[in-house]
Image (cartoon, rainbow, N blue to C red; front, side):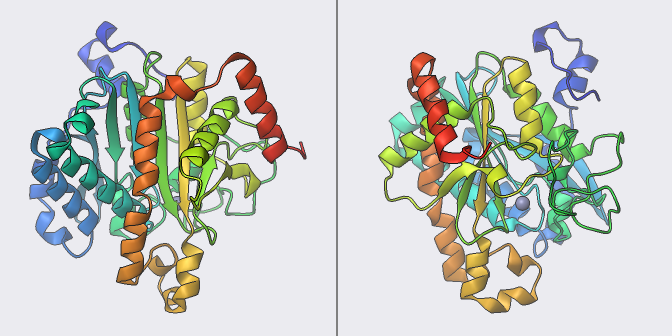
Length: 376
Ligand SMILES: [Zn+2]
């Protein structure tokens, strides 16, 4: 597929629509029927996701976006929607498990979806927001093959967050910033000019389908494995200069801090930490921006070094570097981000109320300059 294809669905023939928005694949449950029993101890997150959907009844719709063949399994890459993302005024997209080993991101997202569903049952006002104001689109396991194998990369050895067709404009850290030397080394980008990986295409289809000019959207992507503190990262990773929407990010940061002054996240540009090639959200943000579409992606990078510091035995398992292994700490992480995600849902629903324009936009740009970009 071409990376930049986009058109309005009504004008498309069925085959074109499938090329742009993704193929029709078997239902989530039908795919699970073939592998559920064998996945219980190996990919419990997928089992939990299916249970959540079953409990949610009509509140959640599912769509199989791709089928991933790995070992003896055919795994579904699934999107869940709450509300109608074809007609809602706004969208909040949530993604996790791009790096298969970072299971905690998937668990945090599922824990939040559970609270959304439960609250829909007794809070009429909460539920009403999904009639027209906002829709949720969640992909809790972007890389199910990688998660099955406890690996950062997908089953083809590609790091999906180094894979987008975008090169950094400045020096990136050796290997970590993305490499094309070998798929035996982590952070492999894939061969130059090769077909896009199926997981990447699935995300592209979701963006094409739901992100539209008249539907400003926000996105949060969950990761773990870097730093001692939870960080909210503003794109870009491919350059140090501020993202075009930097004023909106400053406004969002101020809104967050005014509402939750005792929060404990470091909120700033990813490029202050490191640059990388092929960042998926750099690519999708630029693509949407070129098409006049508002999409504000954020990355939550959970500070897993703290979990390792408190429980050094985790150093002896690869997964332990990315996930809390002690139950009470896992529970703390699962409840720790609910408020933030609730806030992002409300922020996406009300984006017109806080997105700056005119003089205010210029002020926010200046604020960004003094906060983060003085050296440029
Ligand atoms: Zn990650």
